[in-house]
Image 1 (cartoon, helix red, strand yellow):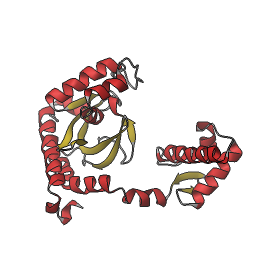
Image 2: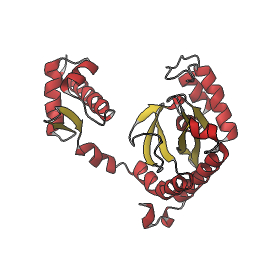
Image 3: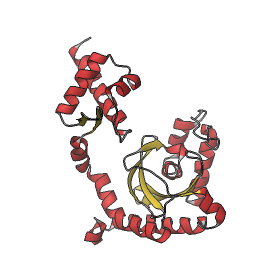
Length: 264
């Protein structure tokens, strides 16, 4: 193996370790990492020492766990596109959550995944538990489908036509061809739903945030099915509230000079 090949392999392994630990907010032990990654123990141990020394991971000696360190946050702060998006969206998210008293989330598309970049939680005892920075396959969520509706039809078909998709619940769409049909419907009506397709018992409505550049993000509101069935939460009201939220975010992005201190 050449030195260049070895360097590329090490870089890939480093990123895989970081991505894996990032998906586990409570951290992972060395044993956990050995089980989840196909690396020799000696190589993994040396890699972890380097990553911790560079402050990309931290090590909790009491719990014997590795957690995301401060460096990813520092680098993330320089990613201006998403930082500005969350700053401009904050006021509208807070207002939508206040009106609905439900959790409202902001997400963007990364490859074929939705990444949640901000959220405002409602005050109800029974509510969706989610994390900023978490990632899910776009096809299995309402917010993800809203984001996929911004892709060209040709790109959507290239990714999904003829594919079998992983099932998460009995309601998950597992046919790529069926998904393409659903996304066509999302484009026509301007919103997406998720009725227990990733998490049983949770209903979600979502709308894209559109600017002149196309779909730049999406907004969702997720509620327990019990509140929909009882009439306590009404889908038309949820939908109209997050539509207003999406329009406000789009307006703020297109007129950034109007942002105030309350948005930060």
